[in-house]
Image (cartoon, rainbow, N blue to C red; front, side, top):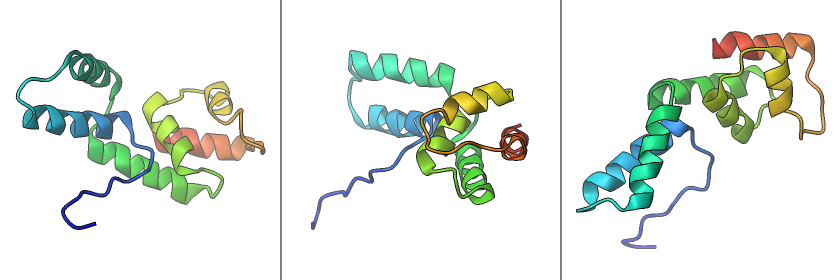
Amino acid sequence: MIGKKVLEDRPVTSAEAKVILEEAVKKSKEPNYEQKTTLEHLTKLAKMSREEAGKKVEELMKSNAKIKPEIAVKLVDLLPEDEDDVRAIFAKERFALTREEIEGILKLIR
């Protein structure tokens, strides 16, 4: 496709979504209501920078082959604080994490 931007279909962290939306708002003359409210929400939700969030996602996926990009993004966005929080994020998966795997995830997130 010449002249058209190809969009990636991948999960993004709240921090990255915030940066993408900020860039879109800068390009538009007047942001609409949805853009404003979404940007407010992402500003409150994003707890780290885009770069930090990206590094955490990569570290999580490298640390454990069971962690898919979608789950890594959820982990970085939600920043679980204990084992139960991590188990809840993995609840729909067809496997169970060991206590050591959960501790490793929590250590990387902290």
